[in-house]
Image 1 (tube, rainbow, N blue to C red):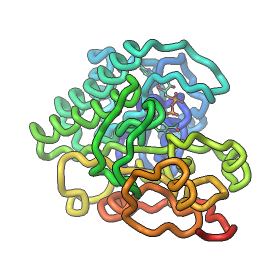
Image 2 (cartoon, rainbow, N blue to C red):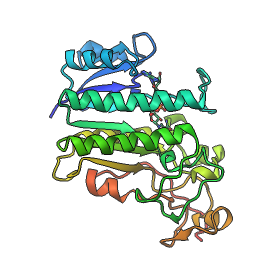
Image 3 (cartoon, rainbow, N blue to C red):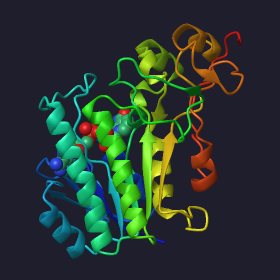
Image 4 (cartoon, rainbow, N blue to C red):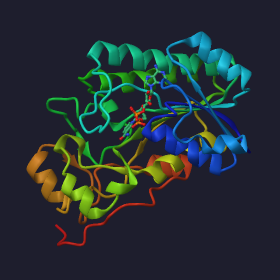
Length: 302
Ligand SMILES: NC(=O)c1ccc[n+]([C@@H]2O[C@H](COP(=O)([O-])OP(=O)(O)OC[C@H]3O[C@@H](n4cnc5c(N)ncnc54)[C@H](O)[C@@H]3O)[C@@H](O)[C@H]2O)c1
């Protein structure tokens, strides 16, 4: 069924990719973000299936009016603030307090407006960092592969804001049992120019992030499935999903990396080659999603 989707963070990397994928699937997208229009990807507006509005998601009144006027029936919440050292275009340097306040206000507003207007399908961007990874010194991983039952131990405001958006979603799902809210714990979303075994390996990556990644195409597919899978296969109100490629991006065996960096974490399986450190079977079982793009390492296995 074609949806009328409000996409927040529509001018950002992931918001643009998802908007494009949604329009290509026949949905109508109402993008919102802070920069003035037109949005960089506004070509689809000529087909009438994409429109963009400058809007601050912290302004709940403006958000409610926009969503209501456009009769949106689905929500994709990608807007967030973070200090990303890899970003080519540097934005404002946010304080930890800014990051916490802005991100948790936006996620609450999105859920509030959705519930008030009877919007039942919501996907929001969480992050692998919700459990406490890149912002933690050091992160503690009880076991591998990580699944969605792993405890949360965030230290930094960004990571904490992602845990809180998931807690907010739990609360709304309790009060509004007809809602279906998917929190997507994306790993590093890789733009096409970096999407090769060599480029990913060369970039390196921190042991704290467990060398994960996900292509833009797989990210968009998982997000749209979060909105569209039937309720029979997504039977409960709120679910979080790890969205990560099935291999890690180092040309080294995963078993050797665990030996070197996380010798005290429990191992729940035997790794072959560079198989990844995340278990994404929940997304496969509930959403029918598996990552299509990954780079198995062909070197010696462990
Ligand atoms: N890109 C990744 O590797 C990655 C990985 C894990 C999770 N995520 C999450 O996915 C989402 C999208 O990430 P991205 O890489 O596209 O980030 P991005 O920074 O490229 O885009 C985020 C957008 O949110 C907008 N925004 C911020 N505050 C806003 C406000 N008050 N009102 C309206 N818009 C506002 C920004 O202007 C920006 O365009 C974020 O929530 C991020 O935390 C991204």
